[in-house]
Length: 177
Image 1 (cartoon, rainbow, N blue to C red):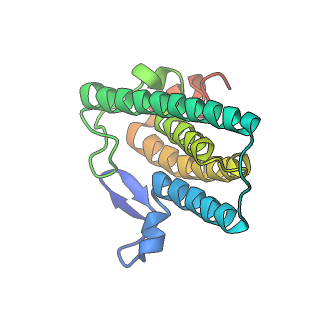
Image 2: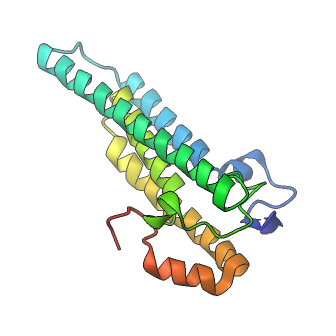
C-alpha cells in the first residue's frame, strides 16, 4: 500500500519491514548490489596481479576518483538548486516546494540518479569487480522504475508545468532524448 509523505509517494506502508523501506532508497540498493558482488568475487579467490594488471588497476582508481568527483559535484549542485530555486532539499521528507528546472535539471530530469550511477560505477571500478557493468544495468533498471513513481508524484504536484518540462528534458542521461 502506498502512502504520501510530504508530496512523495512511498510504496512501503506504515507497517513496512526494513527491507521494504530500504527498497525505496537508491543508494542502499547500490550498496547491497556492490557488496554482494565484492563478497562473491572475494570468495571465488583472486590471483596475484602482473605488471600490466597493476597498470589497469591504477587506471581503474583514476576512473573511480573521477566518477566520485563528478557524482559529488552533481549532488552538491542539485542540493544547491533545490535550496535556492525549490525552497527544499533532495530528502523526501523535505522536497522542493517549487518545480525546479534550473541548474542540472536543464539537462536531465533526474540528476541525482546520474550521480548515483557515476558513484556506483566508480565503486565497482575501485573494487575491481568484473561484474560492475551487469550490476550497473540492474541498478539502472531499478532507478528507471523508481523514477516513474517520482514522476507520477511530480505530475500530481506541478501539473501542466511538469508535463511541459518532461517533454523538453530527457529523464536519463543528458544527451539521450
